[in-house]
Image (cartoon, rainbow, N blue to C red; front, side, top):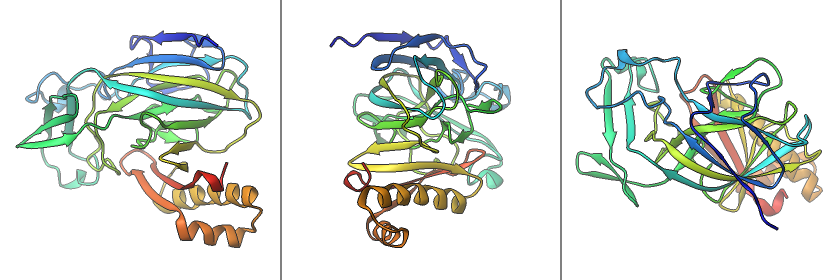
Amino acid sequence: MNVKTYNISAENFVFAMSKENPPVLTIPSGSSLIFETNDALDGQIRSAGQSIESLDWERVNPATGPVAIEGAMPGDSIKVTIKRIDITGTGIMAAIPGFGVFGDETTSASLEIMPIYDDYIDFGHGIKLPYRPMLGVIGVAPAGDPIPCGTPGSHGGNMDCKKIAPRSELYLPVFCPGALLAMGDAHACMGDGEIMGTGVEAPATIEVEVELLKKFTITDPLLEADGLIYSLVSADTLENATKRAVANIRDMVAKKMNLDNNTAGMLLSAIGELEICQVVDPLVTVRFGIAKEYVL
């Protein structure tokens, strides 16, 4: 079967995910999509000497799209297979007063421009970083009010999960007709936590395949990567995000393996993996995973 590929230019973008956003195009399930994306600061950084005060903070985390999926309705899910993420420009990092884990002790801003090569990033100072492209923002329209692209939630958004990378598969719940998929905020490299508020931000070309899963209902995004199934949960605290992510996986394990909650919980306690995605957005994001064989 021939799979049609659709291209979405970075000129088509939103700064908030909303059911009111008109779709750039509508595609059938099983289609391949190529998204061109701008960096998280919408291309505003031109040099390391540029002043932070010159930036327009309303232009943060643009997401290319949205794209509607034919037949997608609330209660369904979409499966997004990340086929490739090609970084298409130089990398940018920043330390910004009031932003990130060290925001309270960052008294002056710093900007770094980082050349990106085939297999490494030149961080400067004699340091080479591994080239590990990943996607910071990917999501669908929420059921209620618009949510800025810089904020994560059950709809996805700015989860900053470094495992949303080539060869991973992301499952997103559908909250409105068409789902309205959008993505952006690619990184050439990012550490867990994204503690300073930025990874190595860069524009990118992202190829994905989208499949509609009718009546496959989930409450939070799921991710299949490295042989594990993760629940990705964003909440006001790490404790609240952790409890919900673990409960999501426990319930799936209990159903698949025919276990009571206590036994499923002990299995998760023995072999589950709890990791932090980011702690710098309006909500924090964690992932909790277990081997795929226990879930699907």
